[in-house]
Image (cartoon, rainbow, N blue to C red; front, side):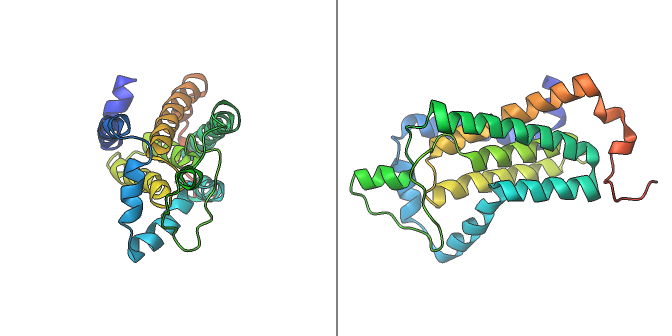
Length: 220
């Protein structure tokens, strides 16, 4: 485990910094405080930017991404990402629909307190099933799983940045609280590492060189 984390430090080091710093934020500030600050400091550029960035965390984006990996990049990475995202989805739905189904989203939370919030044009605000953030969990899971499979480990820094932007987009668009995205990042991280280790332990896919290319890529 330690070796795996060290070998992927371009991703894991900023990830650990995120967990430490944002852990302090969600512990110190009351729910809704930081979200209102973000909401009050919007601008047109970020409205458009996060409106499109957040789409990277939905199911269709995951399907498209895994398909590209499978056909043109690496079957090995596609398999690991598929396993990870399926497990993540099960956990997300369990948490949202059963364990934390009572937790409302920012739109409902602030409406109950008679706060008026800015709504980005084109965004349909949801009211329920806030915890944890599924978009964030999926983004964290896919990006970390890809980083674990990549030979060029420096790409991990870019992948983490993508996950971080998807996570922040959920707060910026007022779809989730910071605690929701923080939990989503933890969930995606744990599932990615666990599923990678378990799959490698029982199937040893890493040593199968034929899997390290896409299905439509020529054999070298």
